Length: 70
Image 1 (cartoon, one colour):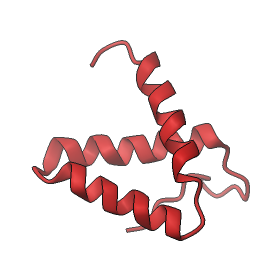
Image 2 (tube, helix red, strand yellow):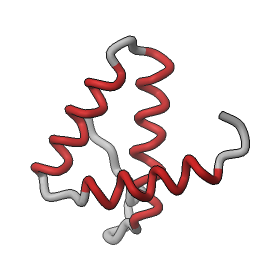
Image 3 (cartoon, rainbow, N blue to C red):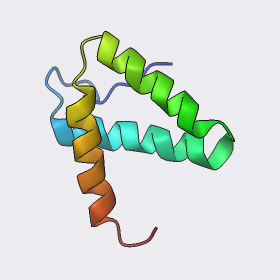
Image 4 (tube, rainbow, N blue to C red):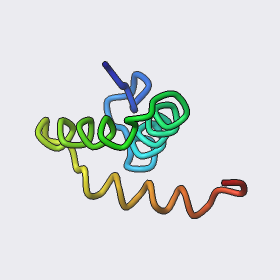
């Protein structure tokens, strides 16, 4: 699976990355009963690849807090 949070730009911001990762989570949640474990595996791979997994998760929490409907 490939996610391009920068949409072609060389510098994706934390908000862009978190938005894309959150969208992945929402897609998994709507389609797969094992979504929690799949998302955890994705985040572990992201962390191992050098991504700021903790920073992305904090930003995702901010994004979730801004949602109108849950």
